[in-house]
Each structure stands twice: as C-alpha cells, then as structure tokens.
Image 1 (tube, rainbow, N blue to C red):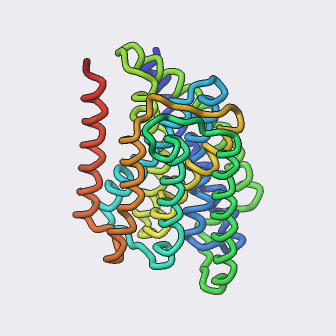
Image 2 (cartoon, rainbow, N blue to C red):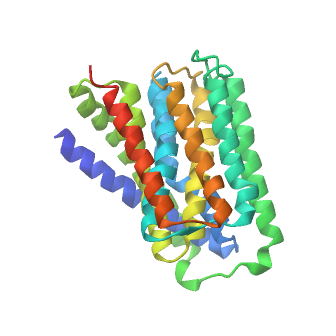
Length: 315
C-alpha cells in the first residue's frame, strides 16, 4: 500500500507544482517580469515548496537530518542531476549578468550554510540557531530585492507572450490549488518514503539526501525541462539557481525558527559536494553555456556521489 501512495503522492507533487508555477508565471507576466526572474524568483519559489514542506515538517518533528539533508540533497540534485539532464538535450545558455550575481550568491550561501553547520569547518556538527536562520533569511531578502530591482531597470526589454497568460482569477486559483495539492502530496510522500526506506534498514540522513531530496526536486525537473523544450533555457537555469538559493536561505532560515537544527548524519563531504555543484555553473559559464558534454559530466558526478552514499550504507 505504501508504494501505491508513494506513486500517487509523486503525481500530486508534479501536478501541484505545475498548477502553482503556471499561475505564478501568468501573474508575473501581467506585471512584465523577465524570464530569468520568473524562473529564479517565481518558479524557483513555487518548485521549492515541496522542499519547504518537508524541511519544515522535519524541523517541527525534531528531525534535523530530514530538514537539512533534504535541502543539501536537493541542491546537489538540482545542479548535477536536473541541469545535467536538461543540458544533455538542450544546451543551457548562461548570461553574463547571472555570472555576476545569482550564481555567486548561490555559491556564497552554500559556503555560509557549511560554515554554520560545521562551526567554521572544525569538523564538529554545530547548531544552526535562530540567529543563524535570520542571517540566512537576510540573504533571501537580498536576492528578492536585487532581482526585482534590476528587472525594473530593464522593463522595456521584456516581452509579454499572451499565450502564457490567463485571467487573474484563474491564475490565483491555480496558485492556491497547486499549493494545497503540493503540501498534501509532500506530506504523504515523506511519510511513505521514510516507511519504505526504514524497512530496508537505512538511516534518516541517507533517506533525506537521496529519496526525499530527489522526490521533492521533481517539480524543478519538470519545470526546467518544460522551459528548455520551449527553448527558454534562461528560465530553466533561473529555476535551478533560484531554487538552490531559496532552499538554503528561505527554507532553512524558516525551519531553524521552529527549532535550532543540528544534524550529525549529514557529513562535511555532503556539504562540500553541494558547494562544488554550485561552483560548476560559474566555471562552465566562462564559455557561455552548459553544453551536452558538460551536462554528461555533471550527471556522472551525481551518479558517483550516489554510489558513494549507497556504499556507506552497506555494513
């Protein structure tokens, strides 16, 4: 029965994210917001809602391994897995403007989280306190403010596609309905994924870094591939980078307000892989795009990381 509920909840996550993103994009287009900002600040928030629900519930239940592991695992999967798969079929262009702010900010908050989680890299897991959470939330506010501030300056270059918009009341219904479906589906998904994984004797950290992280990142995968199919790789990249920034700053920032987070199951290696994944778009971006070869390299990195995680679960 758990497997049936798991499959149904995954479908709910995908459809919920689709409605939420479609409604949010429609509203944003009416106010002439650019594609990258829609991807990073609107779609990024929408597709990060599963991670938010899972991490928030994990913190509420006193399970920091789930709260933190879900974010770390999702960020790794977003770049190495989702960007890698997307680039294999549709090479992703990287704008120089994004190389100057969004990508460096993603790297910065990844490093900041690692510093907070490991007490300045001394190897001992530390508590992410409520004060630390406020620091992360400040990064979220900075990102939102700068994204929309820069967008207003370039407003004349934004083109509204009538086919991508719908009446405001319909867009609002999509946003609210999608959000409700996401929250309900995520709750069911997490409960049943944990039950299934525990039946195989694996720990919460492994579950959150792999099964839960990949499951809650399905909306990002769907949104990025859909954007790339429409030849809008700018929105696809914005969704990935924006989601990673939100996962750290908004999700863990708010989750740490529920209770201080300390995770002994998420290792320094996991954080280092997350930072390395965040740095990759900056290095690759020097050539102006993530090519198919780059995508294959990123996907192989994700596979190797998961082999490492599985190997460490074998007694």
